[in-house]
Image (tube, rainbow, N blue to C red; front, top):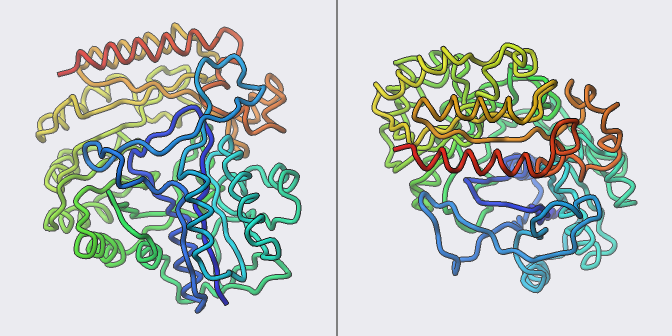
Length: 436
């Protein structure tokens, strides 16, 4: 049996390769190979070698302007499809042996149009081959996918939660998960080249923030073995010459003494130039020991999920931290040798009862500490408490995933507007430029 695994195009207003990797598809490839299935992989988001690379391997994707959906008519930005051009896609796909089954991943719910376009192109090329769609959007919005793509099998449970066997469909063979070590190495070995590499030390998240659906998407919180993680990083270093890595965990520093610290000491002995944490680390778990170990392992870009230090919003953010604790943790990081210009603090907009002036005040407070404020706007995720909270106010989020887009959703809330969101972004950029 032969499978084709595809990372689809993405449709949105913006997309930047800030250390992106489809880890779910790497895990899937691992499982397919574990079951003796010959597997080919195609990445629609592969970055052309002709494009200028940015620092640490990041950079832009190829893009194509496409018609803006009606729901976005007032958003003053170009709407684009990101990824390889159609001609290249068709040429590359035609070079693969005819598959017996095709798997397509999915990520953000509001990137669904890219998944649809990818599946339609694959169906045109392989009209009789069954297509399976899994991943984030498939789990969170299965009925929308089934409606848009009739005949496609939609997998609605997390791959990593399978115990002994994984049943995709009654028409397709089960996949054995026994003795499967959840290594992404077989997936990495299917990728043609790397500009940067992923580090994944755990699956899921032990927290229960009201805006996050991690516990629905990745099963139960599980730590991966250091041996597995180091085998993956060593492969990327030794085979592909990768020197820049990023952390993909939802809770990287959780139980750091048991899990993360020994790994950091091992990574410090590798020929790694830089490690980055764009996902948002938990400030509460920063100690002098973890800060020193991260510095030794050559962490550079640090992003922290502050969201809001206001006691009014602590329930929605699981009380991640306070303004006083933020100052204390920043002092620990700078004492360990980190530059404040490399530290970004995510401040969230769209929390219950919050207004633009509240968010702006928090951004100014963060900037006053000499670090970069990073505004993020709430995207309502199906299966979360905040999704249910906002559903009566914005009923369309139940039926239209495009309304989840963080470029739009908060503007639909009372007291907010697209202009207010843009003013906050502009203020954060100006304040960030003052950080030295």
